Amino acid sequence: MFESNPQVPKYSQLKEHLKEQILKGEIPFGQQLPSENLLAKQFKISRHTVRQAFGELEHEEWIQREQGRGTFCIYQEKTVRRNIAVITTYISEYIFPTLIRGIEEVLSAGGYGLILANTNNDKKKEAQCLENILNQDIAGLIIEPTKSSQFNSNIVYFQELDKRELPYIMLHAFFPSLNPAYIMMDDYQGEVLATEHLIQLGHREIAAIFKTDDIQGVERQAGFMAAMTEHHLDIQTKYLGNFQTEETATFPEQFMLELLSKRPHPTAIVCYNDQVALKVMGVIRDQGLKIPEDISVIGYDDSGLAMASEVKLTTIKHPKAEMGRQAARFIIDMVEKRIEKPSFIYQPELIIRKSCRSL
Image: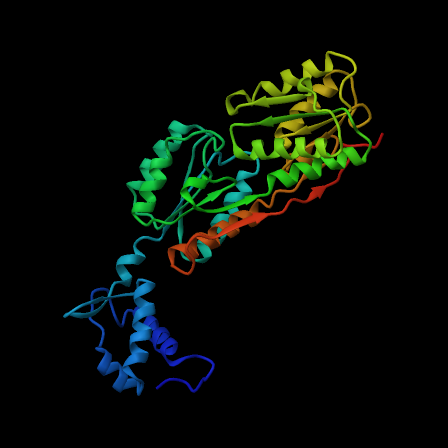
């Protein structure tokens, strides 16, 4: 009854045949499947071949074998859980709309819905989000950890996900103690690229500003410092600014005003991301200085802001939509038990525009 195709094993042909029957509703949820003997006789194959097909179908949660009773379809029960929760720090700002569109594109094509929430990079709000999704019927979770460079008591919620065998994947950062699936950028190497670009242009007095309550900022700062050290350049404390999420609205401008209030000022500045870079550029212009003639500025993420500024911003490319798509592909594969804990690290790319000059 199978097609004559030596390239496809008979057990695999039987498996696909039974899946097709289940999907068509010919074997509904709860119905008992024919016995191994009956299927072997019907398709003129061995019982061992039937057992192989049943084994894979059970592993993929299409059927369940019960000793002394038989084999039953459980697929309909599992199809109820077709929603993926997505928790990011922000939703409508910066690179996040593009990232989320990438996730939604793949989830939708795979027949999954999306439950969206955001934390504003606040641990209490993250706890609320995780409590909510643990009380919902979800198939999996894509999450960007909150304040990932700090101790986070919310790790207990991820441990609960592990206990429930609910798959999740972390974006941009991860907690090593959990050994989770993750997808992120090589932020260390990204900032090495950015800093070395300035050094190659002849800059020696280079300032930097980083948000350090996320591991991305910690890694970017480490990359900056490594590049400076590699080229035997001094890292001046007064040229290095660190801030937390709550200070995002005020610190970059204050730091830049302080830098420019003294002479000599740095000839270039490396910024945590494009948002910070635009704040820095605004202060430079307000002080009557020009970019890049007086100060070169380099951002990170290649967001829409990089092209929206008056001087087009040199920056490090963030994959945004592709990262979202890959995260969605991974979580679907995890839910459908094709992979267990995947990981992927995107390598950085320098996008050279008009905000940096050679000395």
